[in-house]
Image 1 (tube, rainbow, N blue to C red):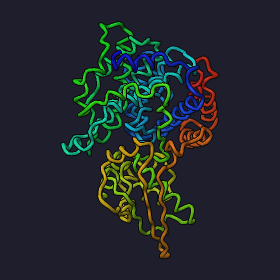
Image 2 (image 1 turned 180 degrees about the vertical axis):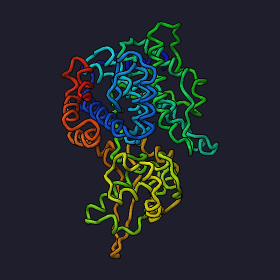
Image 3 (image 1 turned 135 degrees about the vertical axis):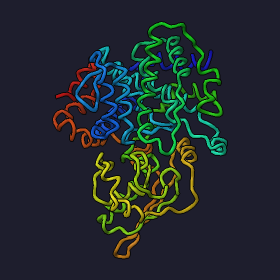
Image 4 (image 1 turned 120 degrees about the horizontal axis):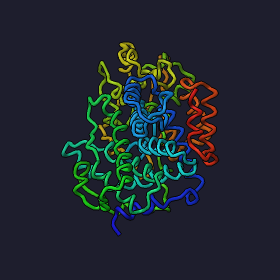
Length: 456
């Protein structure tokens, strides 16, 4: 059996009844976390632009725009919701990227269009995570060679498979049709590479890639001349990786549920800023400090992606990746929200000067090397020390920030998190009704009943 058909057979045949209860609950938690992160970005220019583009050409009212009150055609909803999922960098982080930005918008939009049940939706989300994560791990490059060649990591590129599998599953593809869908997605895999200065394009690329995946499913559903072995031909992967680990395509299928090894971010920030922000928050709260009390912060290790020297002006993406900026905004007393990233806040000279109290110790470590540790099911240890104006010094070390698979959100904790993010935009009553519905997805026969709860 080909690698393509092997993984296609598993994801196509996966049914709600086959999935452990803990895994189903994880899918609900990720659903809430993703939609909450998206709605929280409603006032950010990038999300508004994506939503405006999605509504600009009209079309059938098939699926809800999370950052608005309109239904639009499925492909437009997947694009806008996928982009919004990443705008605040507040969604999930798997070993290889943000599967939620493809899987959740695609599964929900297609289930809405077809009026399918919560059980069908949950099975599609789990199938998407299990398939996507294995394909993405199979494509992970030789990190040392990648760094030596100064080639960027194709994080967004392989996310096409999360949305392709989610859509194909909702559409009821059998194994051969799913193999054709995966092959179409392989052929269409975009060459998105993260680079400094990408700005909005990086966030929008999550939406574009999500739509490409669902387009692959729609194309397959239309009945083109199928190609079944797209994952077996390494020529398709040379644009995103320098090697293929064939064993990963079907590794531990049905035995090890990789969706349970997904990190959900507590903070609107790059994944490698999560632990130092947790450590800073712990020390401030544990020692009853105010932001004004803190005069110096040191952090170990020095992760290349979050430790750049402060500069002005920052782009939105640079602010989300700069621990110096994030620490300064946190110490200014602001609760995490889109308010951390307003244009005025990012340009605030007071925040910039405050960010200079942060220093990093030790040699610089590549983010890809950090991900290699994440692949071992743990996390690099972070140590943060702060000095106060009273001359005191406090230190805290941690390895697993809140939301890490070894320190996960419970459903109750996620409901509280989602409420804080969604309620300012949708109102407390609508928000609470929506959250409770997602917590009981399996009881709903038509997903449109749930998304309707976000509408006025």
